Length: 149
Image (cartoon, rainbow, N blue to C red; front, side, top):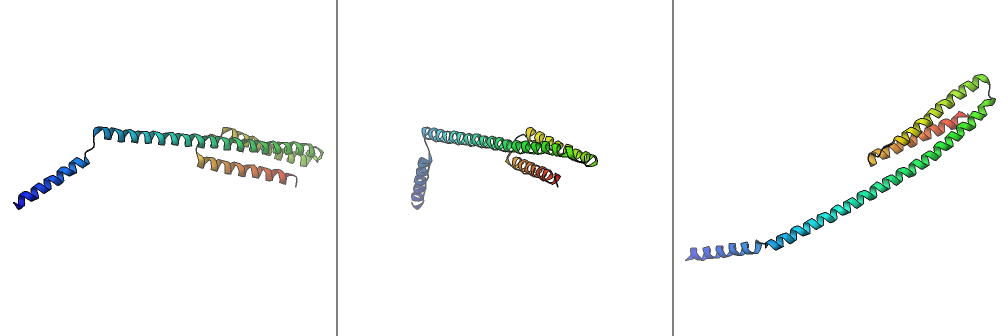
C-alpha cells in the first residue's frame, strides 16, 4: 500500500510537470515571431548606427582635408614670397636657396598626393594617418619658418 501511494504521488507529480511545461504550438510560434521581430529591430538599429558612423567619418575627413588644403595653400604662398625675396640675393646664396625651395615644393606635392590618395580603412588607421599628416605639415611649417633665418 505504501508503494502504491508513492507510485501514485510520483505519477501525479510527473504528469503535472509535463502539462505545465508543454507549450502549445501557437505559443511557440508567437515566441519565435517576437524573437524575429527583436532581431530585425536590432539589425535596423545597428545599420542606422553604422550609417551615422560612416557619415561622421566622411564629414571628419572632409573637414580635415579642407583645413589641410588651406594650410598647404598658405605654405605655397609663403614659398612664392620667398622666391621673390631670393631674387635679390647673391648668386652663390641664391642657388642654395632655390634648391631648398624646390625641396619644400616637393614636400608640398607629396603631402597633397598623400591627402588625395587616402582611403578610409577604419578609425584606428584614420587617427594614425591624421596624426602623421599633421606632423608632416608642422615640420613643413617649421622648415618654411627656418628658411628665412
